[in-house]
Image (cartoon, rainbow, N blue to C red):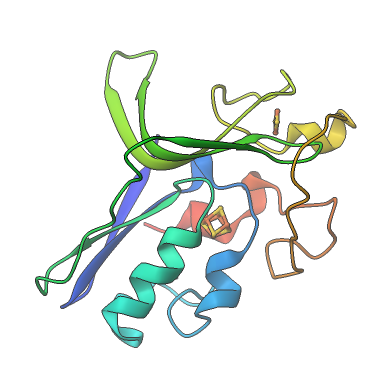
Length: 168
Ligand code: SF4
Ligand code: FES
């Protein structure tokens, strides 16, 4: 658990690399705000807060979250949590997810990608081990575009080399 905070005037964005599944929605959605090559990699004020919020809500893992400082609407979780199995991959959950960590701390996520292949080293979260394990199971085909964190569909960037992990 290593959630970092990026403060803007209108919106504050937080990021936890430990749960990111390297789908790259952020980098493709708003490249001026989310830029792997820049430090800090998130510039929350580089786009209207509504746009930043919209892209953050597309992050399927809950790695990205936001809080508005401009009085704008906060993320609204669906009343009933929705669980979507990703074909050959994790369960994508939308709704309030409570995770109790080994050290007893409680984390609440508005979205999460949960392992269903059994191979993740970061359970209950998916860490993309399903790709190595060649896990096969029915589910929705989720389209993943190539991006700087996913240069080949079946080879996401390794967390150990992700430059966002080295950011102070
Ligand atoms: S899961 Fe995808 S959208 Fe979310 S932070 Fe990681 S790369 Fe960006
Ligand atoms: S489903 Fe992704 S690591 Fe298990």
